[in-house]
Length: 89
Image (tube, rainbow, N blue to C red; front, side):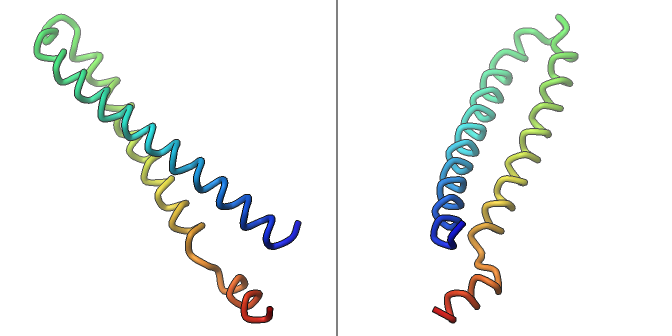
């Protein structure tokens, strides 16, 4: 695969990742807001178990978002071999 094709594929993948990350962040914020609105009403009716599970989901989602951000940063940073290729052309 030519360098241009690799870069184009990488840019497409980065764009898809950013859209997915934005969707995940939006859904997480919405879920948190809805849960906080409901939890006061359902405290004492088993909400503690639900809250525990939601906290696990929240933490896992935050770790996923952090991993996506790190991956995007890595992909956006040119590697030394990319610089050598562009310098050679």
